[in-house]
Length: 308
Image (cartoon, rainbow, N blue to C red; front, side):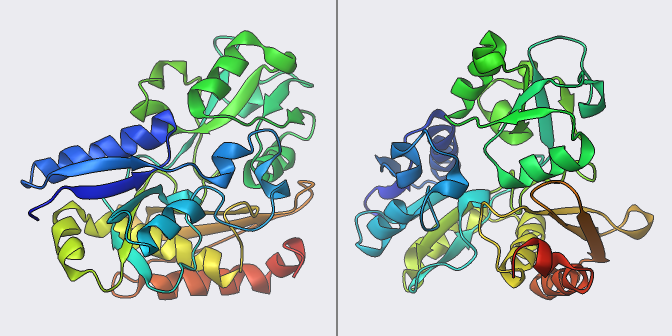
């Protein structure tokens, strides 16, 4: 392209790291890009848990509007924050290679290697309904308190023991991207605490009719990552769950270690019931696999847990 490609991004440290990564990847293909920082609803309201905010797309709507208005050419998102139903006229232009989607435990004390290693009554922070529900299912004796803010702020709150915090859950990818991997107490098995659909992946959103930009992003696409997140997001869409619903999904090893298998999970908000289902991913139609696992979850009562 003759002019610099405009990349829309939030202004958090993690969002800027991600946008700078995209900018550098484009530069390796000879494409010049510039960042446009856009403040979102999720950035403006940092006190309330996300599930108490009205609407959807708390971290994406304003950036998508800038894309629709032509003020930017590409919206750079953490894919787990992007609603499964995109505004008319927008589409995913590329999904780069995904980082480890696993959850990690950050603790104030040293030597804690798992959720099971936390003492009864420990205060653990998160504002995610998905994480909250799974923690309650596994450790009903822990005291879960709301925890908002960007990644470094949340890590610091745990380290300083603010509000009596002793632990918190984070996405492994976010900590690693910000050079905070040393703060990880334990990587949690994704089948124990299942991540959000699309966790660890970036989503580069474009205007549907902008063929030139889509072609420019093509070298950044990673086929295996795109298949995995397509299956996971299809499951979420089929269950009509938003980004903050207690729905988890994870593409892991398939039979014999070959291919991949989609695992889906819905957990009651009080942690009383948890439903997990899985199916081998159809590489030709990963979205159909997401629908299939969603059907299996519904057949075992997932709709009731989601209040449908």
